[in-house]
Image 1: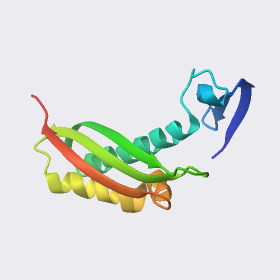
Image 2: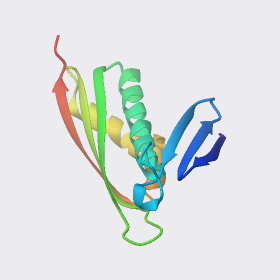
Image 3: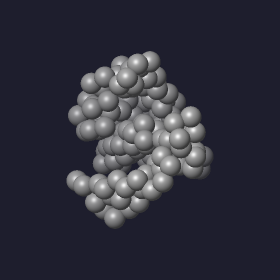
Image 4: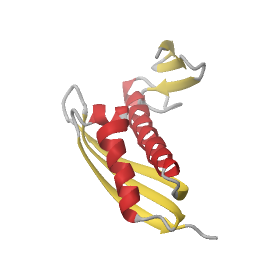
Length: 140
């Protein structure tokens, strides 16, 4: 995996990924940024949410469960001193589908947390990771 990050101006940076995608990052105004893009740490948190959501959907689909939606809200706390690593991350999974069994969805979440999601496993080295599940029946 590769990525190139280039300073644009102020405290804005352009990242170009190995899969040929680009995204902007910017610092907070108090750090010289213009608030035109997400902060790097916000992207780290978003990537963690995307990684685990990807796993949960894939695991449920492979198990032939009728999943129709998956949303993950992450609430994180950071250390007060440098390095300001994440110290707590709470994941709220909102999963919908037809006749989904709570234990199947919980198992998918656990498999992601313990085996498949590289991002959350890495974050777990500094942060206490917790989760909750909100399961809803999909409308027909």
